[in-house]
Image (spheres, rainbow, N blue to C red):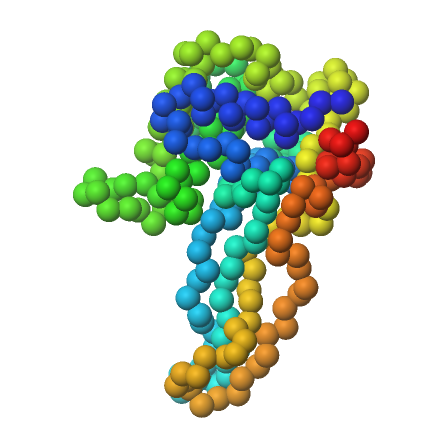
Length: 272
């Protein structure tokens, strides 16, 4: 069976190695995993997740009276933290998730992509998506890449015409280096085609599938001794979720047009 996330990581590493615009990226600190995404539903084909954001400043939720505007109650103080992910003894700063089988079957439907890749084979849309997520990675590890305005300041948006133009430039620059077609040929096939050719599609997921490492809330203990509104304080009721992940938390899953099933732990498979 074809390991789709492994193929994607190798393709991303090849793009980073060949295109100077992405040369500062360290692919050994980038992990690729799969999420569920049916073809007949809406949603992203892929997403970039940042794990190197610093802990937030302390804060709390609060509620106001609609009539008077007075704060009637608030939550405990808390901070937002990023989960820790270490795979093969390497800290992971960014993750790229792909939704299967939706990623494999993405059509070229937007007017923008039709214009950008007019006359090009459909699989280049998938390559555009791959580069799109890579370009979201800030080489200085400050979060998701922000675009600069004309005056040199950073825009609050991470998308825009300039972003899409740069992604297309990287796609064309990569293909201009004449990479080995075996690196990207898997993009030419839809999900059904891959299943027929390889007997199935597998991908790396997290053991907590369909969940995955996410930024989480941590209640401060002790609570800050600072002046606040005199009101009722409600304790935060937080779900118990894992905050540290290693290779032992990775599982290989086989994906189908409808659903998926776990196969084995990634670390156990490698040891064999």
